[in-house]
Length: 160
Length: 114
Image (cartoon, rainbow over all chains, first blue to last red; front, side, top):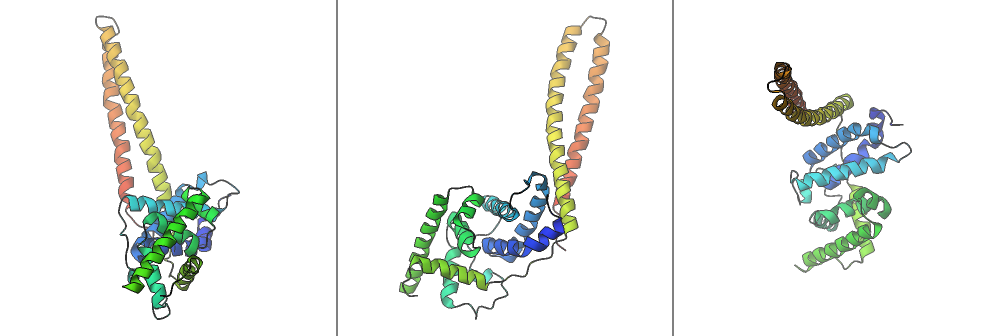
């Protein structure tokens, strides 16, 4: 049974918005994605299968909308981290982590979405595979390539 | 940055993400439900409109055949009158559906944030 919309927003809204922010890296775009995801969820509520876990379904809708928007190039890409509006002051985040997050933002979209889902959102590789519609080995491969690129980027920054 | 192995990287990304917190915008759930229902209706109407166009095309072909076949027969004028009636009413109905769809699309531009 599909729960009441308000209950769903109360329960999953915060985590969903975190995902939107990690994906979009800009508040306006994240708010649009957040809003659009809920509207899409409500549109598709009749197709939600009873017994299916809600959160992966919600995440899949959100990620698919984001990928669609990337395809249409409606969202800006590769924004620097200081474009992200967070309640955490930069004083609390070390320079090292700022560089790391900046490097994550510069990853190719396919790799970045896998990194966001698994490392930033804490999904398992299996869950990420289900959300992205690829195999677990595909997710592992993307993560491995992402880590390799990140390592190179951070090394270049250190050397440069 | 010191050399790091790949598991450190994953952990550092997770920690950096965990340190961020965002203020979740308030969603007007009732407006979101209305918007979702409107879009669903719009989608159904579009399907209906496509079906109507296909039906109209089939009907037009049928009418032409009947008209061509009925030249010089007793039911020729009945066929002409029927064709004229269908030819006038169906496009008007179709246009009404399309206008309604366009109106729904315009309403979709309206946000649902409080």
